[in-house]
Amino acid sequence: MKRILSLLILMVLILFGCRKTNTIVYEYTLPNLTNLTKNQVGEELKDAPITIVFKYKNYDEVAYDTFVEYGNNLHANDKVKYGEVIYIYFAEEKAAVEKIILPDLSGKVVDEIVNLINEYNLNVTYNFVENDSIENNFFINYGNDLVAGSQVEMNSNVIINLSKNLTSNRIHLPDLSSLSKVEILLLFMSLELNLIIIEESSDTTNNDQFIRYQDYETNEIVPKGSNVYVVISKNLNIYSPHNLNYDGPRLDSKFTDVNPVDPRGGYFLAPLTTCVDGDTAKFDYPTYIDNIIGAYASVRFLNMDTEETYNTPEEWGKPASNYTCEMLQNAESIIIQTDPDDGLIDNEEYGRLLGWVWFVPDNTEFKLGEITYTIDQYELLNYKVMQQGLAQVKYLFGSGAITYADVSYTNWMYQAQNYAKDNDLGQWGDLLDPYWDYVNNKPKGW
Image 1: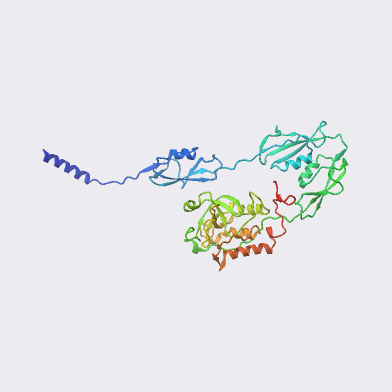
Image 2: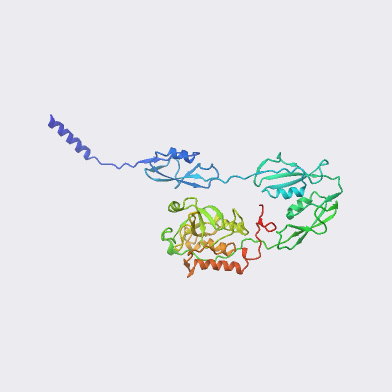
């Protein structure tokens, strides 16, 4: 009996040993994460047999920290292999909408109102209403059911109703200090005076801004129907970006296979995420860069410095910021190149990546026979900002020794700065910063 049992076991082993072994591939079905927050997604996938990487992106259609999409063109219900790395994107935090509290304008006359309301970022329409009970040009109320203390968003449209009292035959000339030509025209619409604008060249007053009355003084009383000559500034020396043919350095193919981190000098594609100011921006970095500087760190442009835009704004900060942001936001492609002769980041306090920022300008076509942009189509943004006269060569610290056409990047930057100085461009010439209030020495609107 034992012999028969042993034979049966042997036959079973032979039978199963002869069967072909199949390799089993385990797959995981991606769940639908729509409307889930980052914490909820983490809970949903805590036992999932995949490697998860959370990232953020600009996306206005869902709330902050809410699921946007899977990376690598994956979707809900797609099957992925166990252990596969899956990127999951969430919406970045949106900037808070600034609220403005409407001031109490009771008992204020139109010139007081205009001067006061100019301190707020609002689009104001002055509506003059005939009223026999309120003195001419005084505040009646806000339109659209708004009242003093109402909260409105910045740049909202606000109507201010002012009295138009026709019982008096004499008018006090209003204070026009700091008012523009358009604001003066609006103000005089209710005054029954013949306003005559005289333009006078001025290097100390913003363009189209009040300088003085020609024949009268502020608050002087004049009869209705009088001709009132108002002198405003006419200054055509206002900066606007120059259309300059690019004559700066180009990317060198010898850096194509160089590691951007060690030994540095290599480069990587980096789509823009946020433009900060004239010499700083944030990009979507490769994972190995994220791991060093973090996904939200900025790139500080090498060998240059623009005037400040935030905290303590400076003259020429806003034009530099606008120019840099326009170039990056309209770029067809962006590349960040590190520098082998400088550190990778600026310091521990800021932790910003130091880089040369290359971009393909808007509307650049592929070369014939190419399916992507070639490295000789990229232009150095550091150089272009400098050539516009919107920056200074600064913070070298040994960087910029890389050469193109036997000229170092640093010398290219000095050439751009010298060009701007020689041609009186931007902050190096007599041009005025269109965003600066030269009368009060502060940014306009502050």
